[in-house]
Length: 356
Ligand code: ATP
Image 1 (tube, rainbow, N blue to C red):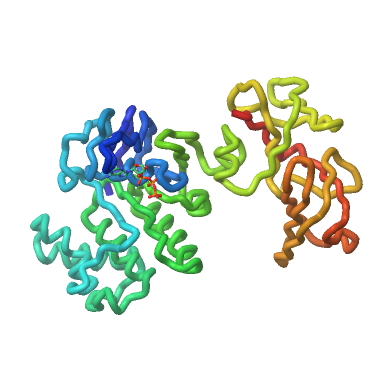
Image 2 (cartoon, rainbow, N blue to C red):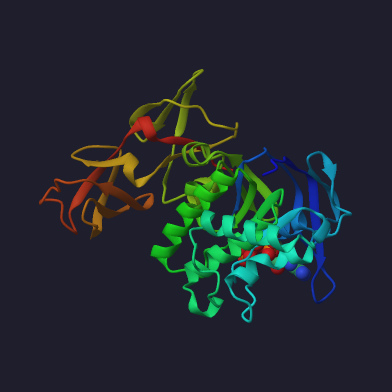
């Protein structure tokens, strides 16, 4: 399989809405994808992910900017000459063709000899774990199997870049988890450069080498899953990656590798520095980064306890709004709904986040 790089350089896309007003769907974005890398475009509905993917595929032309595949600008090249293949949410299989015919379709269009087609279809069915399914019509397959056929059909033409448009949205939770692992395995096995669009942070965290987090047509943050989860550049990035509680703080001192902050009367040494300078900061604490205690800077009343087996979620009403704390067993029998508690910060995993 060919391994190519992809560069998105200052790309914008402006649409006209039905009243003729301009909608800036993608606003001057730039990012790079290394050969063989799995990059996810993640963000809320309407942030421009799909438009970006469609521009890479060639279904939309950028209003400005460049898209470089192996350093060749492809914006003027039509989709079918672009050496990309897309896996859609809706599978897009031909119902009147069997599995083998569906997969062979792209090769037939490219006038690949019959014996070669048979060989490649057989090989790719093995990769996606569907050996023996050649004769089956798509209607007789489960959603997950149909998505594997769609993946095989995209892979068999040996594209340089594989594009995924929310491919798992139509599958139930269990199957989605299985397919996530499968997609990752197959992408690494084949070694293809891949771009994956999703609004599901778990998918992004588990699949990606790199996440491009988007908001309002712009890039909010680019980084590995760990970087974005551990070092969010903004409240938006922190919240998008998972439940987090924010507390207002005063910064006492920035040191080279730590920040001293004050939350009410408590002083904490946070072993990190903010990713970006700002006038004001908040302390970001994930539910696992707080603990209930007999003392602590934040006082509150337990409103709800959600028992989840191996841990419980405690919802606590405080002066800073509702705070969620993850508590591991053994659970303190005295901490019942309606009781007063104090919340203590675990500084080692707290984050300093620019307020704006
Ligand atoms: P979703 O997760 O809901 O698919 P998205 O992040 O993929 O969202 P896009 O589909 O890229 O977002 O849309 C970005 C913005 O561009 C939205 O405001 C959308 O309404 C607008 N848009 C997309 N396509 C068109 C079009 N063909 N004409 C006009 N506006 C469009």
